[in-house]
Each structure stands twice: as structure tokens, then as C-alpha cells.
Length: 56
Image (tube, rainbow, N blue to C red; front, top):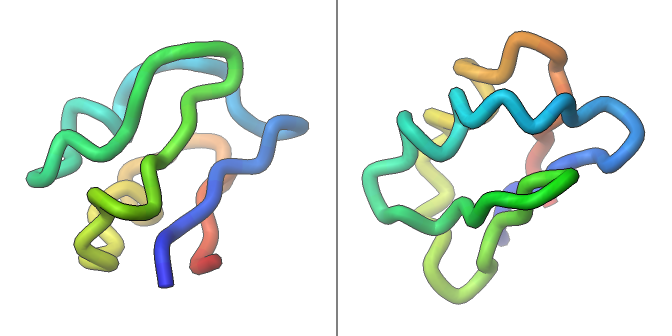
């Protein structure tokens, strides 16, 4: 199950995208995670300074 980014909390800083080993996080406001590319590794969740990412 892919992780999800909360649009209410995401500040579009890009730290999650830089950390993603699968390049599954795409830029935008908010950033978005492509579920078919997500490895469910959790790297993005621990990197997000706003706590905007959670397991889907």
C-alpha cells in the first residue's frame, strides 16, 4: 500500500522527493506519490519536516 501526502500539511519543500529511492514522488503543490511506483519503504515519511506523509 503506497504512502500518501496530506495536501493540508505539505509545504512542497521537496525533501521527500529527494529521499525517495524509486523516484515515485512527483512535484506539485502538494507533492504526490505515484502508488504504482511506491516501494512502501517509508523513507519519505521519516524525511518530511511537516509530518505530511503517512501510510496509505
